Amino acid sequence: MFAFAASFVLVVASSVARAQGDDDRDGVIDEVEESTERSVVWAAVPEFEPSALSISSRSVSAPEDDLFRVTFEAGQFEVEYVRQLEEGHVTSAYRLALWRVLEWADQDGDGQFEPDEAVFEDGPFPEARVNATSMRNPDGGQVSVFSIIVGPTFRSQVIFTLTIAQRFMRLTSDRVLTPMELKLDIVVNHFFENPGSRLVLAFSLQTHIENRIDLGTETWDAKHGFSKDESWVSVKGDISSESSGVFFSWKNYATTDGKAGAVPSVVIEGPAAGYESKPEERYFTIYMVYPVGPDPNRVLVIHDPAVGVVSAAYEGIVSQPGEPRLQADIPLYALSLALMAILVAASVILVNRWRRPKP
Image 1 (cartoon, one colour):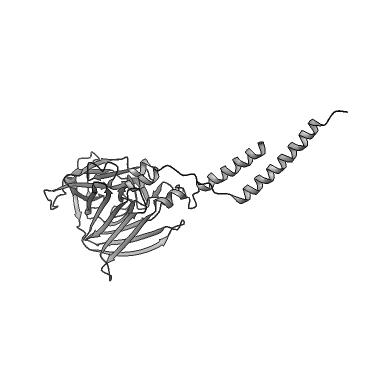
Image 2: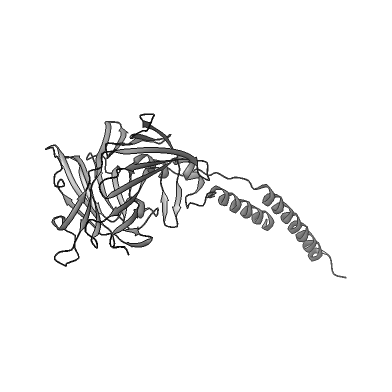
């Protein structure tokens, strides 16, 4: 019985280890990756020298399937989430644009950015060129990467690098890209009109006036261990969509001329100065303030925001009761049988000696 128990424990332990495997070492077990993989379709238009992009990501075999789309055209991203419920569709959406590149001089010396302290602005950024590539990550999922070169304008060159994956993919030691989002890396090369000032990016975010907006630092990714030290704007489009919505998030630090530094952000409700507004829309202006670099005349900034969704389909999949999936490990099973045979033989010998009558 002891031998049998030992063998059983070894086999079960091996089976659990196999079931909890993580072949690509991204911190997400393979079973979860397989069940939450999404179908991604994209198109860049026109075919020759494309300037617009459409990306669609759909859940596969979820209890409640959902879809999110990201489009880029004329310098603006649109993020839309659609979820199917018994009572109909739940939709959340927003539009996001890099409105201006600003130069800031802290005129009152309080260390706090204020829009009226901007001493120069560059933009808008309507023109763009889109380049697309695709590859496979280590676990076999498709990864699509898009480079969007914006401008150049009078003093700025901006490049967006968009990355979307069908499965989870580790990017850095503290960042895992989920299938429910699109990485939106930004590179800005700026030559200062006012040497010694600080670079500020101004984003305009607009959504329907009835949508609910949450601002904060507890992003979905950070809460679930896929990232850390982030801020975000979360948009929910319907009272019944408490578990889903769309978001724009960004790291609270960036690299300036190769050196990491804090990026304080200021979010102001209302359209940016000069932005054409509509009464049925709600507007937010997001200012990201970057550290000073060693060169007062120019700066190279690398930052990594993301756009994506809090997916009800994903939550529905991972919250399902797990099914036991024992996977036999043949070598370990054979070793267990051999061990069991040895223990049984030893037990027989000991029992025979114990039962042998004394002379």
